[in-house]
Image (cartoon, rainbow, N blue to C red):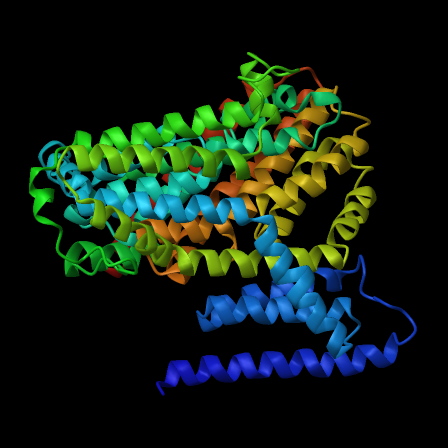
Length: 545
């Protein structure tokens, strides 16, 4: 056994022993209470354990399981049988049941990706891009543009953009970690400012009186983290700036040819003979069909085409839709059309198309397993009353009304980072934010809601147990822990500027100055910060020389 593996194993064993010892100690102290840790800081300890272990041991599966185990033990007050029952039923079984639709979508999407690779569409696009995209900057901007265009859903975004742009980024020696960051930066942040997306629908569910989409749209100009992430990606790409661990990874990719790639779905295998006949449109057409099918399916599930309250009302239908039903529906239709199209083009046989389905499932198994454990961790954290604990924190901060958006942003960041779910975070916080401001009718309340959404995206962006972060790693075929560690300094930079922007926005709205003033100030601060980092790096380089 290698030394690093041995150290990781020892750390995991010590962590489990520590949880058991803590169990015995805490059980003695709280024997009469069923769950003495409810709505206390202990409710956030399980995800903290999982995150810490994942970052230290670089073993995501075992770290997540230890976190779920800790949550089960805390909830059961360290009763072994009840803890095991909690982990299995309330954690893993409920996680699978609650995300079955997303699992189906991932498997179908994986099959489509395998089909496009088998048919040679990705290779054809790569050859076209090699002719038209001349520089690393062009490759990164093309990745960014494609990510912006695929705004329907973050999972769809991550896997599709990754599949299409990997050949292009590899040609220009862009590291897989950098590719994963650009994919991640155009997934959740873009979906959170797109009214026609699964995220807008999810947010709408948590606002009373059917006004969710209305306030979602009003909050967009104040969603500083999402908007400033766009500014950040474009600016560092044009400047050719990298810092933190990403700088070393990019140096290795550019000068040593080490892209840090993994190949879990066998893309390196030889393509079938028909793939030599593939053209760029053999990639573009299936992706276009997939986008259109998913949008139409989301509209259908939301009641746009059926008699009822939402018939022929596009915005209301998207506010009423269910992404866990609409996305599998749309992707299944797209899969069937793609198979027929590629067979008609003579690029694949029926047998090869059927073989792509289990291969697509196999390619998604690691992501599905991590998503299951991450959701199980979220479930056990919820059983411990993490939402109540956060609610109490917000109430205690209520006196600082003008600064409350900035405080909400930090709390949402921390909660999303600890639980790995932005949807769960804003689901917890939006009702609390609404109550804290006496409804969402005032400008400061809209800023507060936007801070909640932005913080949820930020924490999700940083968390190693986030489903979107996992999908970005899968899409880029990048080592997951390396993706998290390289993008963390970038995300923290944008988060810091966003925090300052929320302080400014809270103060400016009190004198009647709204987003058209605070947003330009935030953009200026973001660009200024980037130039400051570049100036510091240049000075440091000169000093070393």
